[in-house]
Image 1 (cartoon, rainbow, N blue to C red):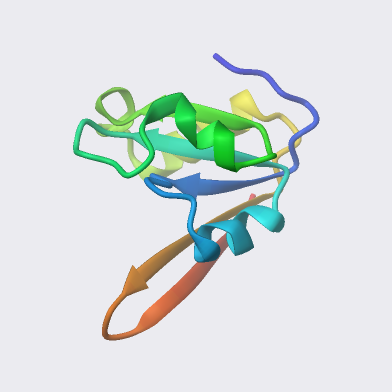
Image 2: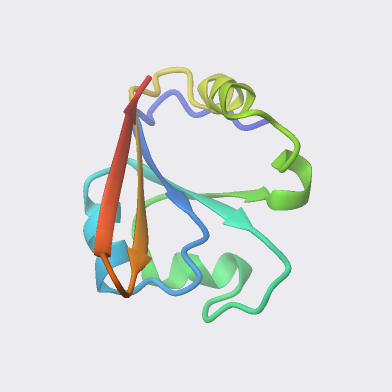
Length: 104
């Protein structure tokens, strides 16, 4: 369990390459939560921290995949007691970049 009282907002995703869209999302938050999976990545594991000045917390997909969304958010709130905002983004060739935000 992580406990970081200084984090009020997080960006969540796989962040397999810290590209311009990721950088824009990351600028809006206090920390980054990486959902690590076993598929190939542009920037594996801890190497993401080389391209990001914000704290990075890595969650293994195989340990959280069976959680409901409520259970996962509750888990994040335990890890980050002052968490108020969760941001994420998706990229689609047909739609472009879409952002999401959850206020907790």
